[in-house]
Image (cartoon, rainbow, N blue to C red; front, top):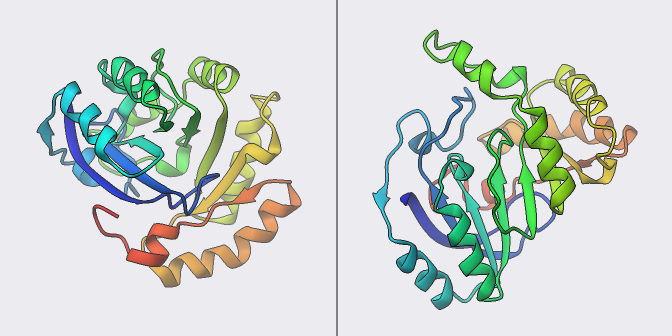
Length: 225
């Protein structure tokens, strides 16, 4: 498997925010969001090839109950299926962070889906059309939200993006409002706080939650945190 990095930290977003976790970050992505905060897994992917056995051993030796498999887009990786099966056999709680564009029969206790809306489209002419063709896969979203415990996290850059989330969710009436998290698009603490001021009331009006970005609050936008 092509792995960008592994590290122990706390989960910074969503339901398990603050929970100590081992992160396994795959490299490679089928999208090119302009606001990607891990460009070393998408725009300029890097990493090293790691064996399935080596990754499982690292999980076994880590002092974390929770394992977060993220990317890039981890669901692109065929070896993710046996990796998650073997991690689950160790009794770990698995969260998979995905954009919801690729489907594999993985093992996961929480499917953390971050649908990419039109506000993610890059200006790059090479990637603009390719990104938009791939970013919305309704059949994948329906399967993942039907067969797994799930949360949906939407990156919001402006109040208009909140209305766009409403349009998106109308396509999936089975999704529960309390599983929906909005996250401000921000890489700096001041920007995070400013956007949260208007985002929190807009989310509450709709019965949604606002996810903190605890890793940015604690460590800034740095790798391995």
